[in-house]
Image (cartoon, rainbow, N blue to C red; front, side, top):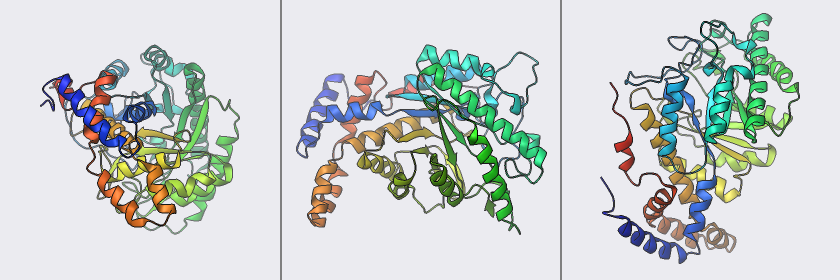
Length: 417
């Protein structure tokens, strides 16, 4: 399973690759450093099938559904942190960890509803974050709750709507505490499942209620160096196939008006639609973007992210725009049909490899040909780059990062029963 018989052969292959890229003006050592420096946030919910630690047995009121019954699901915080730690050890580059509100840890038997959550309910996560030097991101949880059966922030019942507003406010305070604890801003990403399975008679009223709720949630001032708010749209969900209140158009308009960041999930658009072109179309108008790497497959949005054409194009677009200081990257998939730790590793390594390929692109040559009207030259170079030896540079990145090369990481994945 090893691509090279020994390190010497790997270094020889890298030397040849380095020379190839040098011919188009690329320093591969610098590309490796740049690719490793981009933080990638791994999602906690892949480790336990989006169960959380509130005692729920399955999802409800959410329009999402993990499928499969592969053994080995994390059952508590200690197991989830251990599994994430193993995944981290097999993934090169800068990493973060992304929590949902439903992963709070309290005292045994303690009952705390989501609108009463405080930073203290995540003190174990914050201690772990500091000890492991893994910054945390956060998400309010608007699903798997009795009050989420019909709607949340757009609900026509004012009392139910107020519950979810209080929850969103609590989540922002928790994320701000994360940012203060770790010395870097925590992203707090808001997604709600509100929508309709069949054609609604009134599309506007729920959106007006959502707008008012967001206005109240975001009016609460918190230290900007601790928190970055984002809003995540979706085309459809299970049970909301005909209409989603928080659509792309709604959140894009709101983000531009309020000057907050927008989340684009690769699986939340039409199956034939790519988000790569949206990046440069939106960046001039909002402070930043959050990209959720997932893989839509027909009408399911959350398959494990791969080194696919779409993934590679997204990474290239961010690099070409020089926007890694404004665009955050995170994984967002949950597959309960395969080994959960392996799913993390496959997805994260695929994204890191795509980032490396993006930094290996001689963008200046492409732009120069384009500006000179030499479109044939631009196209020829793009085609030539497809067979450049990125694999040898990737192996060198892994070797220098101290993570397994090639398929060797599979030998570290524990058997489960």
